[in-house]
Length: 433
Image (spheres, rainbow, N blue to C red):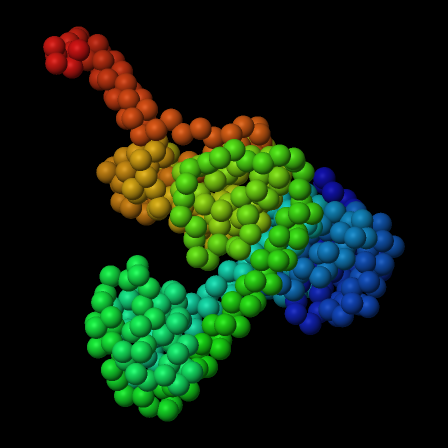
């Protein structure tokens, strides 16, 4: 027994069941309601039972309030994956679950999930709220497009995005009462490839009242999301300023186009002052990706002993499925980790990059199918991020040619070794020499 002063808690929406060792109380299993007063009574009972470490399952979001309260009261709290603590089938109840958790924890068979510091959790909540608002904004754009299509306003066939400058001017004038196609086409931006005549032709439709009402509602929802996103950007900037741990400014990096969905402040400078390194120097990682990764894992990776532990937590390393000495599968596990999803999107953006990482991604695509190549490239990005955050070293791209030369040298070395084993000798041609 490794943790004799342990307790197990089965989390529920209305009540929590708590189990302590049988020798600590006449009633070692108790039920507490989920109200704040009852949670304080739960913590008081654990203190009277001289409990030092507590294990609970990650059930929805019901565990957060109790987790934070127990941490403030000085308990060591382990948040465990429900898949790792399955009980014997046919014996499933709240009382048995909390006793099973307490028994596994007492023998040291449970490991707590990774949870960053409070400030990083605050940044993570705001970043996730911003991502949700971006999805809502995209749905309102779809509703605007649907209303225009129902009126046979074929604006999407002449401009690429109705949420852009030209599209927004035309939509707002339509909602304001303008119906003249020539007048609406006059709001065309100079960067639009279609002519004013083509835009005017696409704006001839049937202006039905119900579809105009739906368009007005969708535009109002779009504007509301824009205002909410600006508030999120202000709050994100405040939290990042509180996380500043380094001074100075990042070195001038590669010139990249600014994403329309990126926050409206200098995220790169704030992230440099938080981490001490510039993650955007890695090809494929822009400020939005770097913000998501830092908000999910934080700048301190001390909880991960090695880079292998870090990539395993992200779900980017090969899996282990061996039976009878045979490898049954090495597929990486499925995960809903937001940092993993962001890194996979960044890896997919390397397909046209003229860098060493871009050459590596294209080499992986030639060897395997695209999803596996994306996972392999995301794994390399995760390793680079771990090394930068733990060692404080900046990333320097060696270029596509450097990667190709290293790959060629490795292939020649392997062929030379194989030829020597067969009693042969590789002789370079005059042109190659």
